[in-house]
Length: 200
Image (cartoon, rainbow, N blue to C red):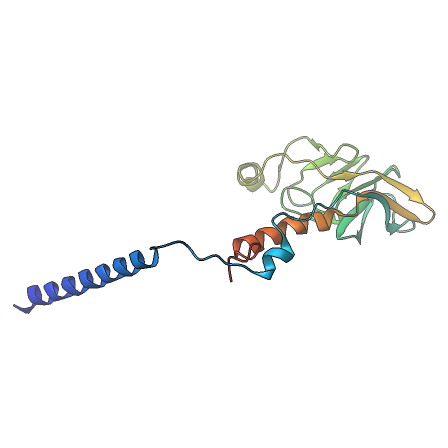
């Protein structure tokens, strides 16, 4: 019948198209690759800017907000820092994201020198940032089995802190955001071929 003839015609057309595509691709690769020049290559350079680390005492919260048993967050220089005043009145500065899933420290349960994540019930030493006790003991079954499989015990990021006048200050790298973003934007631009003008 007609099926073998139609199959033969379809195969013949496919072979012809494939041969044409290969010939076109081969023709394009003959000779040297064109040189692309762009102002983007000159303006951006080959390496991200070398931004130095600059540590500075920065006020994050007012002293009146930092009451016993509280965690209060402040935002400066692109950094979100929680000032934690434990149940004894001692103050600590930590990143306002608790491992493993970034729960705000301001939602944590404050103890004497400790903070506990409200979801996983993981606990950390506020002075050292190290986890204390079982990692992700909650919620039942999910924490010990699934959360433990997805994450491993992680420390808090801690910063020196002090009271200065009516403010609580943390000693932070004020260039941290710029350092992070310089690598980020380089990666994005490089992935698009824009750091050397190759995209254009």
